[in-house]
Image (spheres, rainbow, N blue to C red):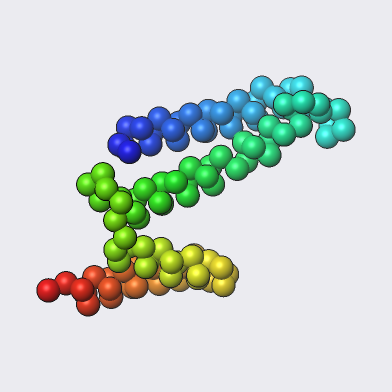
Length: 110
């Protein structure tokens, strides 16, 4: 996936979310009066940034020259995911993921 496609997807998702907050908020007076699309749209719009961020991480971690690659970056991602699961602070998550990735690259390089 090219950077221009990612930028278009990000702009589209935030435009979609802005549409939900600005336009659909006019129709929703309270939770009980919502019907149809107005009922599930805010929940869906709230999930889109997380899905885009996860897709961006997957593309940057598992692709190399337009091919699927599993290397030290995948191990760093797993270490970071475990740190997030254990509710570590964000700085510690980043440092742990970088350290694991660097250590594996150091051990596997010539």
